[in-house]
Structures are given as structure tokens and as C-alpha cells.
Length: 497
Image (cartoon, rainbow, N blue to C red; front, side, top):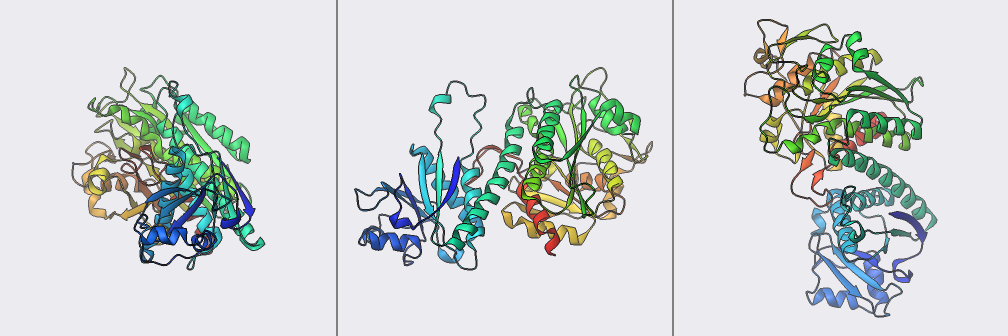
């Protein structure tokens, strides 16, 4: 989708379709829709007064102008009650309008952006473009029979009235496009089948990002990681014929900036290993690399946005499969930290590979470590698929993440009290990799906390929102790319606080 900015007003711009937003009646018309209504001799206000369009949230009404305006058609889109307006509803409104336009077979539309309330043109544009691009996202790479029938919007023209507005709108469009591209990068990886999205492909994707955006990349083979002392990562990788990879990306290396490490779980398919999962729903286990996908998307966008931080993205990537070489329940693994872990379940493999990745991250002496993982089904039971569970050892960092969740990616903090460690006590090793059925998400977080020492750290359990079965306003079914926008907002805010 090509997005460009032009200097013009809505009522004077010739286009295939003009998009106009309205709040729920009886709110008076304001902004571009009011100007268009005056130009059209009150046609829209009459339509609204007759009840043909009420402005309800996500309502859409297509009108042919019959020569009454330079635009051939007008789409009225509802924003709901004015007093309830926020950027999340704005993103949703942009998405629903975009879907309506796309599904109508219309290839081009124009939209005039004006500052509203305390929101600048740049903020409104960034959120509009984000909602539009994420809401019209489609994953069709493997649909060969339907390829010729797929509808897309080809061009969007954003209108501004003054040079200052044009500059603000242009910057908002640039940022919204970069962020949306990053989320779509993550979505594509999560939606891709596991016979295509292997650890090797993650390396290829990381290498392309590094090449395109001047990042440094290091890739360790399993044998190299094992020789370094990563006994937990190597054990999980041993069960698969697909070679595991330990990937490290760096942005702004050696520039004296604050270092933030992002760690993403990269299990490209999770059978559960010898502690094998039930067959029902196992096809979904291709999404167990959603954390890795989010880290790749974040690194891509951070470089394009030129965020002034030293960022390190670490991705331990492997499949988790049963075989004659696979690790077993009862095994004791020595981690990179030197601590030992008794394996109770091979289906708690994510925390094992993350343990070595978190220990590895300490060599960068970061200001903060943030990991993302589809770690526990227990988090889905506790919080559903709308919310990310967060845990950590630093209140200030947890607060920063909560503030960054104004992106619409909801978070909820769970405790990491010392008492929970009792569930992980082992008779044969320093601790076990799982506890009882109680407090499963917290136990996963407690386990990971043993590998970050005193470095500020937060764990994001994205098991619920990483892949959804029912679409939302700007999140289609399937892989969501959750975490990318949250992390980017956190990184953009970092030097402001």
C-alpha cells in the first residue's frame, strides 16, 4: 500500500473515495466532515438527521456523490461517543474503514487529518496508519488458488491544509508505516508453517534485517553454544534434525548509549518433546517462536526509527521434538550460569533455552533485560488472549512497560515472591524446570529470575495474545505480532523519563 501526503482540503480533492469520520449523533459535525457538508449543501447533515448514519463505533456507510463533490464516493465511518474517544478506538476505526474500502474493491482513497483535542496531527496520523495497515493485513503466501481474487488497497492520500500540517502528517505516516511493517514481519513469521519457518529461516531473516539496517549479527551453532556452556539450550536442540541456532543482533554498538537486551523464545515447533503434547491443536505450536518474531520486528523498526539506544536482540532458536537423541525427564542439565536444572517435563523447554540466553545477555552489562515468550498455557487460563502477563525484579522497569501499553497491548503484573521458589526445589539439582500445577505462569517467571542476577529484568508471557482465533478491529485471526509495538513504545520513551 502506497501512502503519500498532499496539500489540499477534503472538499476540494478529486479521488476515488473520500473517507470521513463522525462521532455518534447528536454530536454536531466538526472538522473535515463539517467542511465537506457545507460544500455539499448540507447533504451529510440531512442524512445523519434522518438516522441513515448514526456514527456508531465502526459503522460504515458508502455514498456516491453523483457529482456533488470532486470525490466520486464518500465513506462515512463512525467513532462512537465523543467522550469515549481514544487512540485505540481511532486505530480500530481506521482498520474497519480500511477493511470496508478494501472489501468493496476500491483501490484508492483520501483522508484529511486535523489535530483533535490534545492530539497532534503526527500522533493521529501514526495511529491512523498503524490501524489501517494492521487491520488490512492478510497472510496469503500459500493460497495459490485464490491469488487472483485477493483484494487490496493500492494507494492512500493523506491531506493536510498547511505546510506545518503536511510535515506533521508526513512524519506520523513514516513512523506508523515503520511500526506496522515491523508488526507484519512478526506476524508473517508466526503465521508461516513450521516446515518453512525453521531456525535456519530465522537466521536468514535476521541476516537480512542486519544487512538492510546496518546491524551486527552473530550466529552460534549448537556445538558452539554447548562448548560455551549452554547445556540447557543444547539439550533442547538435540532432539531435532533441524539445526538449532543462537542468534545475536546488535544495533548502535559501541556508541556509548544505554544498553537494552531483548530476548525472544524461538521454538519454531513445539511437540512437547518426550513429554509429548496431545495431538489436538498441536498444529498451533508453530507459534512458539512468537517471542523471537517480536524481537526481530522490534530490532528492524528500532533501526529504521533511529532510536538512540544500544539494542541487543537475542534469539535462541530450535525445534522441540522427541527422538533417540532428545533430552529426557529426569535429566540434569548444566546451564551457562553454572546452575543445574532437573528436567521434570521436556514440555517446559522454553524456560531452558531462555535461561542460557538470559545468562548470555549479562555480558553486555545492560540497563535492562526484557524477554518475551509463549511460555505457559497457565497464562492463557489466568488472563485469556487479550492480556500479556508481566513479571520482573524492578518496579521502575515494570512501570515503564505498563505506561508503554498505551499502544493497546494490555499487560497485567503477577507477583514473583520468594515463596514461589519452593515449588522448584529439587533433590538432585539446584532446581527443577517445573513445579506443581499451581501458579504455573509465576513459576515460569521465578525460574527465569534465577538467571538475570541483579540486572533490571521483566518477563512478558505472551502465550495468550500471540495467536488468536477470533479477529479484533485491527488484529486478524492468527499471529498477532504482539509485543512489537509495546517494546517500541518503551524504547521510544526510554530517554524521556
